[in-house]
Amino acid sequence: MTEQGRLSQALRAQEQRLEQTQLELAWAREELQRVWHEYNITQMELKRRNAELGHTQQELAVLQEDLQVVQGMLSTTESTVRSLHACVNTGTA
Image 1 (cartoon, one colour):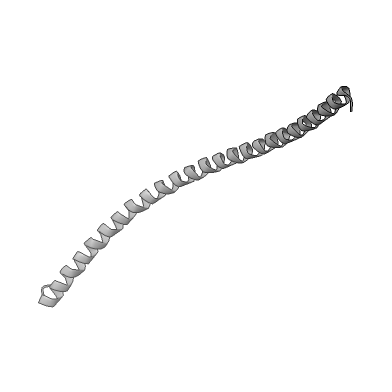
Image 2 (cartoon, rainbow, N blue to C red):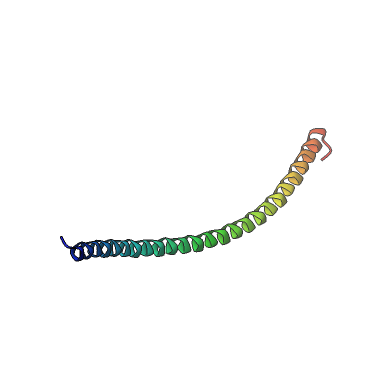
């Protein structure tokens, strides 16, 4: 094989490696775009869920306040019932 033939063969091999590398690079770019897109979707979903969590926490705070009011009313009612029972039991009602 002549020097020119060897150089030509080496050039073809390098061109094939370059083509393969370019294909791999194109695949990697596509994969990166796909992952980036998924990341953006995940970030949006996270923001949505955080907003939902904040709303749920506000609702919970309101419910806890309502529960405290109801517990206070129950305590007052129980006290009144005890007083009435005491009055009935002593005959002073």
